[in-house]
Image (cartoon, rainbow, N blue to C red):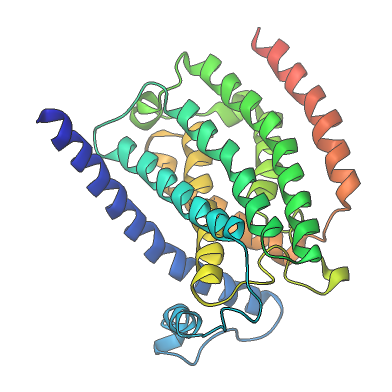
Length: 300
């Protein structure tokens, strides 16, 4: 009976965290569009509601009510499984977030975060490969290989932080201030580069190719599937902003640095040009290895 109640508690906490994060995502999208507008000397969305506050909800309604003929451009079961898997992984991220703040935490929560992150590449491959579009296939292969390139570095960084803290849990990071970024500044800079790739953001948004004049791996999607892909991408950005703040800052500064990382995503999109793909792969497999080896010997 106690096990069933604990399971229900975790599920309800995860759903509540999912709802809260999705509401934050709606205003995050609106804030990003407004900031991009002012950085490009234009207004941005300001018509729907007071100062455009309901623009994200209007866009959601527009996407949901769109209709598509099932047999005109049909997709395989693989594409649908990729969408469902991405939604499931997003819910898994929210469950980890709820476990930290609901008082039920695990000593191996960092490892669970690594497991969920490593499965994301399979969802991207399924979404692109199953949509019967060669441009979507190219986009999903680029995204999946970019994720693999980053995840090798990502896992090394998490292990390094666990070495500093002596545990794979995160409870001590929430209780005390955690200034790992001052101890390992090069690792923190490498982490910021990596999360841009993992979240498919400029200048490493290789799922979208401007030379191909397509949206990327979501080219063949509309209404609810497109909404899921679009919203999950922003949800993962919020979760990675929180996890980055937890790993490198911690304590009472977590919320402030979550907002800092969110603004960092928007600033990078508005400012930085896209890096050539082979340069990025070369950097992640050469320069990042040197940085990690140097930081590892510094810890020893």
